[in-house]
Every structure is written in structure tokens, then in C-alpha cells.
Amino acid sequence: MTDIPRPDETIPEFLVEGFETESPRTLKAIAECAEDRTKTRGVPEYVRDGFALQDDETKAASAEYARNLAAFLEAEGYDTLEAVPREAYRDPSEVSSGSIGVGDLGPERRAYRDADTASGGDSDDDGGRFFGLF
Image (cartoon, rainbow, N blue to C red; front, top):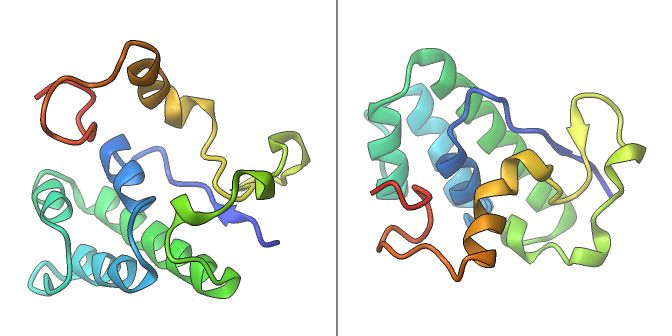
């Protein structure tokens, strides 16, 4: 199984988590939108709104991550990152620098989700994307 690229630290958590549920086709559209804001067809609203607040460096990192994640999903035959079975995740200690095991975005990238689960969940209506901030 191929390692998936690690999301750059500049990419906001809500985008990283949102990308986990997107198809390769949508991820490619997201990458195009990040590079050219006029290309928004097929791009979810949370991404369009999020990109409006990001600098060029963050949008470029998001485009690269979305494109690489789409290539990974297509190569491995998965519809979304969430569809990757938990048994396929690799131990992070076995992974080379710059990449991570399948679907293992690391404990720092999942801290808010785990905290919400332990406390009974996020109480607002944003689907957890903003970690109870809105």
C-alpha cells in the first residue's frame, strides 16, 4: 500500500478534515480552485469560503495536498480517505519523513475530533469543521 502525503502545517484543520470525505474528482476540482479562484465548479462551499480567507501559500499547499490525495485514492481504489480500512493504517514509526501511513494524519491533526467524541460531540451545526468555534 502506498503512503499518503502529509498535509502541510499551513492548511487549516477544517480543510484537512473536509478533504477526508471528498472523492478524487472533487479533490481535483479543489486543487484547480486553489490555483484559479474562477474555477469553482464541483468545489464544496466550505472550501470556497475557506480559500477566500487563505493566503497564496496556504492555497498552493492545499492544491498540492488535494491533488496528491486524489492520486493516492485513485491508485489505491478508494472513494474517499475515510473509506480506507483502519486495518490498512501503518504504524507512524515505520514511515519515512514527509509522508505518513494510509489515513493516519497523526495525533496532532485529530486532537479536536477525539476531544469532541469524548465529550459527546460538537454541539453546533457545522459538522465539526470548526471545532465548536461557530
